[in-house]
Length: 257
Length: 257
Image 1 (cartoon, chains in turn brown, cyan):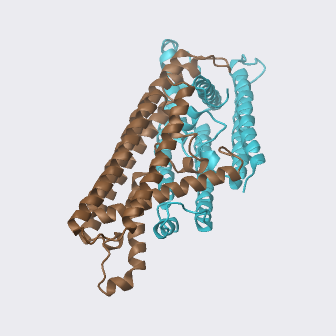
Image 2: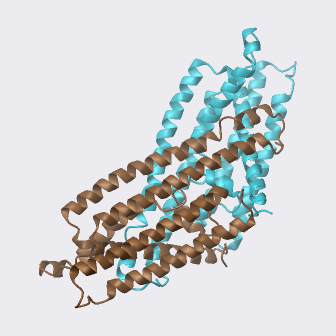
Image 3: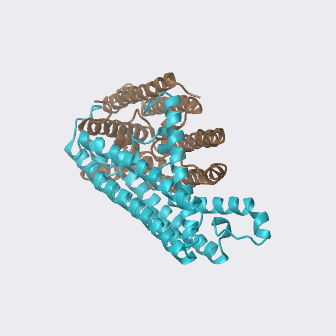
């Protein structure tokens, strides 16, 4: 069971994650903008970019592990975090972003980059960014998208079943038997809700695993340069929605004044 | 756009709804427990119970209309309400309960009441409550459940598409074009988020319509006595989860101390 000090830990876990995202984004942008070192071979640069991608994945993994540890003490706040803006919360799927959002972002960036560099492409100039996904890469991403939609659907159905179970035993027995409108605190109800929360921890773990799996597969499909390009855009997207959400909360006179 | 006074209105809309639920529950229990008036014919009692059911449905309808009006000014809080407990929020589906939860509760109550009155039933004593659903009623409920699951799935898919769209234009353009890690407040992003919120209002309306439709159909399938029985149990369930959630929040040192 959690206490108010757990609340502080949950908040700071998220704040540290946002700070990490900003720091990682800064490093990713630095690598993307740095002119290629003439002493550096193309292969050496690839290795360097791949290491950067791996480091970013390790940061995701560490954040996920930390929040799962916290969720084991008190899971409900992860489905409706008080540390996110109200707007961000309305976008949540099982305590985080939808894994398919990552794939949608790849397609959007690919389309935008094709459009913006079409002239150069026709002149034979290659940049190797997301506008130059190969047919094989597109086919692999398409396959990943299909599998991810399916897994998202499966987890959504599991959550639906858990939520519906609230209308079943043992709570149904208690509301059926009680003849009063004032239900006293009841140990059996609390036990049922504890059990529900334990199942929600498993759901959060499964959802985080799917987010991580989708990201890792995507990173393996993309070239190191494309992967860095994608990671920078996805972090900008996250930080942008977080900042806009906070501004909206302030505007509406909500949290985080 | 909403202001902090809208926050007050949103909170009090929910508080009034909880008070209304308590008041309605009290009236439902009173009718259920009152001995049948010897001057009252069975038909007259049915009319009286049906009027009570209709009144309860009108209260649901009025609450739904009121919150949709408020949501048009500021929709996000309805998907992650600060006026509910954190536990209740983890149970939400599109700003309220899953319509299929209502059907699950009917089945649970039916099973429990069959079990508890089996001896009397075998002696030929009939109470007419939810333990005595006819084959025709069960078939209609089963059909309703099938259609409701389908509709829930359709709305869940619509929300998934909306959430994924955040990774698409025009926000993708902005995160693609900006070379800085500090994204300035951007009118285009705000416009996109406003548009997203408008779509979320429509989703909330559709979900409320489905909740209402499911409840009304269920009330028509059940006899007036069974309907009163069900409404009382569903209100007890709601109030019980609300009270337990608030206790859990206090225990965890969260809102509502």
